[in-house]
Image 1: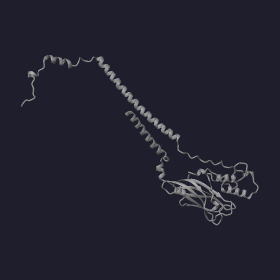
Image 2: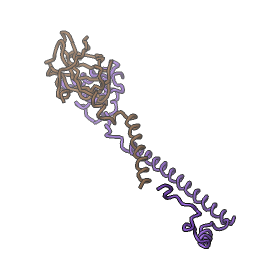
Image 3: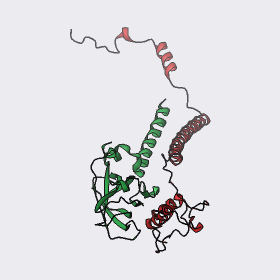
Image 4: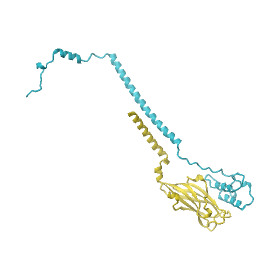
Length: 158
Length: 162
């Protein structure tokens, strides 16, 4: 059927009553202009809201940076506190005085050897041989001279 | 929830980055990597006193090439020097040691004799070379004698097999 679905305003059965048209126009026409004061107040509140959002975002970033800094500090603090198992250096007794027993100008194993031979022979003991100052001249003095001789911080020379 | 995730992620990244940095600063904190290049070996030190009996010796060993740490010292092969010699305990975990011993007995070795075995921990792939300098050697009367000190790699030991 040609022209099916096409209507014209001239068709009397489709025309709305004039009263209804007026009512609809009144209903959907926007009210008058918004007063300036209200507009400004709404704008100001909107800006304030945006500023608050920005401030909150800034606080959040500073918070993250703070947490990160705290983490780094914690790591370094823990690293300083825990240095792993430490090897305690073994301290030798202080170098005995006048350990150059054989008077050759050097403190070495020959000094300990000479004293050991002297003690084994069982001859008279000189108290000046008490190199470790424990009151007796014995094998401990031999060991003290020998240990002085092998010290890494010196001892091979008097 | 999203905020918490972001914070956790940020902290995690920082912790990971810091731990990488700390490990880079302290290679000792990298057990797996460090362990791979570490091995143990033993070095025998000999003193050759010629035809004179050796009653006392003192030598100093240092590194010429390679990185190593001294981890232990044993006595020698001959009964006269079987006991561990004198050495500074501070030499352990270092690359330098002074070793000495004597024997006042009559049964003393002559010629070339192993006087000490030094256990070392070697780092890296380079084979270490050592300098052994004889400080002094003496015969049974305490007189200095002319002698030489040498070193060689020892055969596998318990420490090396471990």
